[in-house]
Each structure stands twice: as structure tokens, then as C-alpha cells.
Image 1 (cartoon, one colour):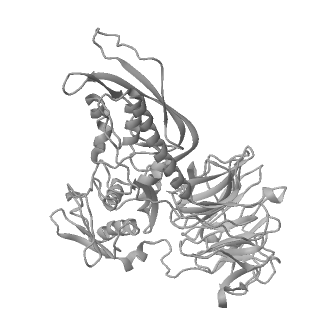
Image 2 (cartoon, helix red, strand yellow):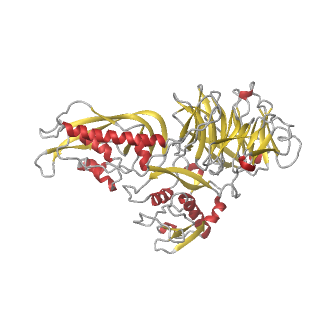
Amino acid sequence: MGADRRRHTHRRTARGAALLGSAALLAGCASMPDSGDVSGVKASRQGDSQVRVYPVPPRENAEPDEIVEGFLEAMTGDDPDFATAHKYLTKQAARTWKPEERTTVLSSAPVPQQDGPARRGRGAPDDPETLLYRLSGQKVATVDDRHAYQPLGSVTYSESIQLVQQRSADGKQKEWRIDALPQGLLLSESDFQRNYRSVNKYYFASGKSWVVADPVYIRKRQDPVTHMDSLTQTVKALLEGPTNWLKPAVDTRFPSGTELKKDTTALVTDDQNTLKVPLNDKANNVDREQCRKMAAQVLFTVGDLASTRVEQVELQHADGRPLCVLREDQKSDFMADPTPGLRETPYFVDANGRLAQLLPGAKETVEPRHVYGPFGDGEAKVETVAVARDERHAAAVSENGRSLRVASIQSDTDLPEPLVTSRGARPADRLSAPSWDGRNDLWVADRNPADPRLLLLHGGTGKPLTVIAPWLDEDVRIEELRLSEDGVRIAMRLTENGRTTLQIGRVERQAVGDRQKVSVVDLQAVAPRMESVTSVSWAGPSRLVVLGKQAGGVQQVRYLQTDGSASAALIPGLNQVKAVAAANDERAPLVAAADDGVVRLQSGVNWQSMVDKGTSPVYPG
């Protein structure tokens, strides 16, 4: 019996080691030395994401340790309704356990330890014997019942599982089963990455006609509870509505109560690459324009999921009659930036403080071209810059961080007067680098400790509006800010008590008479396990590229989702990096400023030098 227990433990340990190795490959980051020239780091191959775990039921006369270990193992499996996991529970516990309620993610598999000796029940003499096992580990994230991921840094996890002895089915002997346990699933990071994937749901920015990404996690394969495939799970999650954090800033066009037709567990495309989505009767009376927006939400959401490309979405009545159809080529009607084309031409500030654009040249070289106007001709010495998304004008901070100006970069004009002036005593206490959102609004932070302000200029002109930021005071400093293209989210590097962290804030707008009140609220930590963050840029609708350092580690460039989860994409190492920049179009190359000048990273190649001297690389925005 003891030998069996050792074999059981060895099997789980060996499997855990293999999956932890796979998790390391999925971390989406690369080491970055502190010195040396631009060099590459060979990316390891990712682990097999199709690894399947088939849990085994409890054996006859299994000892308590085996019951606990077997149940923890069974929670990582894919069997329908978690049928094997339920076999480790008493009938009462099986009825009350809800694995779909939440998922708790630990840095490694939970460690069970018996908490005290066995004891008899305190009631009647025949009350069952009970055992208590303590589960411990480091909690790094949770996923709620709306599929929203919440990173936690590293928090001590401690919960209990109680076992009792009950009569076996034939009544001839007693067997150990779990009769009290925490709700939801308990998984290691490696098991979570093996079983789940991040997808973007899409909703409309409040009062606007463009969509906003809302990342969530769904099962990679069939969901054990709903029996839905990953595509159907995602559409179901879309219909359930936005995550709680994003909900105040977005709207859904689906009528309340809209669900998939009953018993729908698989959505597939036909030979015309049309995805047909049957809905219940709550959607029967929508008009054509509302239906098109509903279809747009589905089309954006399923874009990266279907094994066959989805070229159009057809929403249907429950009886199969079509409600409306939306084609792939109509998606631009619902984008914050509907202009087509891949922007591969980032901007940077040259050694003389002039704004230049990096134009692709022959044989993979680049040709810097100075922009028109005062930012390109040297009349204003540019320090940090933000180019408007229409690329017609730019905002630049100059005079040691004291002044913010907006000028054309398409025509020669005189140097305009400053729109914002900081009174900070030191350059570091003055204006941050500016940023444009998709509404053509310009954002900048005045870091004067005596009067810290987050400012917005509608259309990049006029008197700045002070944004309501309840979290901003003399102890919190905005080092950097970057607005999402949809204008609903703001990524910020904040310094407090000597530590610089990455936070995402929700932008809320409210009309007050003929004026608008703008707030940034409900900050969420994006990289709680990073010791410091040096630079950040948007790299897609729900993805950031971050330069920072983890506790006890070296500086690294990595992709992070806006919910704080790590992206699987790998970034080769780069030395002595000062800033990174990415385009909203994920196909555009990364750009970075290093001691070797401005460099870029294109798909399939290593970092390449663009110019020998330059700072502040930016894409429009």
C-alpha cells in the first residue's frame, strides 16, 4: 500500500515537472543583459499546448493522501462534468461543489498536508472519522465566473479539505471521501496555461460606434461544464456581457437576456466561411442597424478563434431564419481608427532634438525623414513627442519638460504658443510625454509635486481639462502614460514609495450641461510581480509591450495582456534598452531606443539597427 502511494505521488510529480517546463516556455519574455551590443537570444520552442490529462478515479481502499492527491489531479483534467473529480467527493459535496464558480491559480501545484490526527465525530458513536488537509501555495491570479483574469502578484494561499470515512457502495467496507472543500478550481500556472487561452470579447465604447477589446479566459478544448467548444464558449461569454471592470465604460448592442439557442454546444463555419449564430427570442425584434452592431461584436470576437477563417457572421432567429449578415470587409465601420493600411513607419527624436520619421528603404535599411514644421526644422528642440493618429500633427514637450505644443507635421508653420506649461522645479517634475487617443484627444501629466495634474486637451487644442484622478496626489507620480486607441483605457507607469508599477485605469466620460467631465478610475495592477517598469506601449487592442525587471531578475522586454496575464509571444533579448514602442496593428515591428540607437524587431528576424543616434521612438498615438 505504501508503495502504491509512492507511485501515485511520483506520477503526479513527474507530470508537474514536465508541465512546469512548458509553462516556462509560455512566459513570453526574454532576458536582457545590462551591457554589450545589440545581440539576439535564440527563442525556445513552445511546449505542446495539446497535452491532455486523463485523471483516474480513486482505487479501492485508497488512503487519505491518495484521495487528496487524486482529486487535485482530477481538477486539471478535461473529462465532461468533472466526472472523475466528483468520484473523490461524498454525494453531498458533489452536489454543492461548483467548479465553474472561479479558478484560483497558484505558482505551482498546491501542497497538501494533513492538519492534525484523525478524530472521531462528536455526535453519535457511529459518526464518521474525519481528517483535515491543509492546501498551501502562492496565489498569483484568480479567474471569476465572468472569465476575467485578475493578477495578484504573489499572495499566500491556505485553504482546507476535509475527508470522512463512509460506507462503500456494497456496504462491506469504509472508504475515504472529501466532504468539505473550497469552491471552484485550484490549478498551477502550468495547468492553467495548458487548459485555458486568452480571447478578446468586443463591446462598444459608451456613446460611440467603435469597439473595445475585453480580454477573458476560456477553455482551449471542450468546457467540462457547458460541453461547448472554445468558439461557442467565447460567443456565450460575449453574450453574457462585459467584465465587471470594463462594464461602466462600454455598451453591448445585444438586448438583455440574449443567449445562444438552447442546447447549442458547437458553432461552425459553412463552405462560404459564414459563421451562423442562432439566438433565443430576446433578439427577435432588433432593427437592422442594431443587428449589424451585434454581428460586428461577434465578428471581431471570433476573428482569431475559428479553425476556418470567418469571412462573415449571420445572426439567426432560434428557428434558423436570418436576422442579419455582416461581412469581414465591413469591420472598419466599427473601428476607432477605420483608416486602412499597416503603419510601419515609426517616429523618433534625433540627436539634435528634431522629429523624424523612419521610412523603409532598400535592402532592409531605413531612411530618416524630418517632418515639416517647427518640430522637424529645429525651431523647437523636441524632448518627448506624440504623433496624432491621423499623422497630420504632433504634440511635443520641450524646454526641459516645461512646455507642451501642438503643431502640423505636414506643412511648414510657425512655432505655436504652449498649450500647457509646468511650474515644476526640476525637469523630472514637469511634463510627461504626451499621448493621443482615438478620439483625437491629447493627454499629458504635469508632475509638479506641488500640483500634480492629469490633463486632457480636446482635439489637441484650447484650454486643458483637468481629469478627475482620485488616486493622484503628492505621493503618486505619473512617469509615463499611454492611451488606448479606443480612448477607454489608459496605461500608466506610476511611482509610489520609490517603486514604479504598471497600472491600467478606466476612462469614464460624463456630460455635465454643455461640458464634459472625464475621470480615470479603478486602477488595476498589470504587472504586480515586476519589481520595476521602465517603458510601456500599446501593442494591439488588449496587449502591451513592457520594459521592466522582475524581482531578482534582469531587465526584459515582454508582452502582457491588459488583464495582467502573460502573452505567449516571445521577444528576443536586447541590451541596454531605454524605451520600447509598438503599433496598434500587431503586424508592425517593435521599435526600441538603446545605447546602439533606434532598432526594430520584425517578424522572423532579430533586432536590426535603424539609426545610430535617436531617442523617444513612437508610433502614432
